[in-house]
Image (cartoon, rainbow, N blue to C red):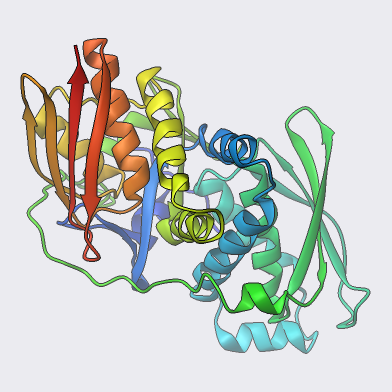
Length: 356
C-alpha cells in the first residue's frame, strides 16, 4: 500500500510532491519520466464535454476515450512497478491484489475517485477478471479505462472492460482478457514530451517542495476527491496524453468542425464561472496557468477590441482557447469571437474579439 501522508505544512499528499515536478516553463511532468507531461485541471466538465460532442455529431465516442486513457495510464503505471515484480505477478508467485490496491491509492491521490476491490480471478487464462467499485469517479469512461490499464500494466495482457451503475455516483467495473482491435492498435500512440526552458516561478512549500499555491486545494484522500477550498470545484491531476489523443482522434475521425465544437463547449463552461482563474490580472493568470501545467504565458493584453494572448509550451490548446474566451466574456459580460493558432512546438497565439 502507498502511504497517504499529507505534508505537515501545505497539506498535499507527499506522493504528489515526490512523483511530480512543476517546471519553470509552466509544465508539470512525472519525476520518474520527465517526458510524461501532466495537467492539474478542473474535472467537472470532462464528461459533459464528451457528451456534448456526442450530441452534436450523433455518435458515441466512448471507445475512443477509453482507448486513449487506457494507453496513457498503462504507460504511467509501468514506471512505478518494477519489471521483476510484474514478472512475479505473471508467474503467480505474488498476489495481484496488493499491487492493485496500491494503484487504487495512487488514483485517489490524483483525484480519480475511490476505487475498492470487489472480486477477481487470476489463473492466466481467458476466464480471468478483476472487478472493482468506484465512488465519485471524476469521469466515468476515464475511470473505466484506468482499471483496464492497471491490469494490463500488471499482467502485460490486453484487457476489455465493462461497467454498470449500481448506486448514486457508484459503479462496478470489470476488466477481462480481450485483444484490442488492430485498427486502434495502429492509432493514437502517445507523443513524447521534450522540455523547453522558461521563466515561470512558483513559490515552493519549504517542507515538500510542491508549489505553495496547491494549499488552495484540499485532498479528500478517502474519497479520491480534490477540491478548490473557495470555489469547491473538483480538480484532477492527469496526463495531458490522456486527453490530447482523444481530441486529435476525434478531429481525424469526424472532421474539421470538432475543434470548434470543443472550444465552444469550454467557452460555455468558463463563461458560467466554471474556472477559478481570471484573465483580469496577468501575473496571477500566469501563475494559475503554470500551476495547472497548461504552459508559460508570455503576453496578455487587454485591448479596446478584446484580448490578445501568447503562450509557450501550451498543452490542450483547444481547452485553453475556450477557457480564455469564456473567462473574458464572464468578466466583462460581453459576447465575442476568437481567432487562434498553435504551432507544432506549442506556441499558442489567440485573440478574443468583443462583439459590441
